[in-house]
Length: 168
Image (cartoon, rainbow, N blue to C red):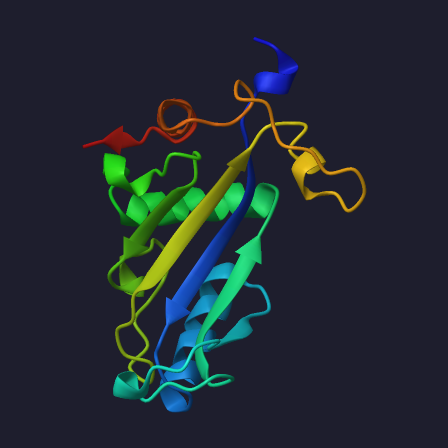
């Protein structure tokens, strides 16, 4: 196989959307810090949605990003919480994988904390090939060639081979 066609994990992003600032958001941040052992960033709203009492600048969630070996190790744990099963709809047309975990206690080696309660989280895996920096760089950005873009089938095959994931 051509080295430029090899797929790798760029990053794994963990996200919890709470919907309001305060105690719930603090609990969600504690959970993400425990799972990832990384610093957590609080996310703000951009839009105003009066029916949900949301206004711009309001803190409503938290997220953290992992890269490299830490991302791969954590992804294995998170997939085992989901019984190594994904739906085909969890993989988008650009080859990114997203799935949810209903309760954080499903993750191996995570224990229930009564002060936090039960909270779920979203996991987003971004896949890329060598040369993807061409579309991200500041000077002389270019589009990727059609054959270089990761397709849904490629991402499914990558997840099956490297993580033993079953697609339903």
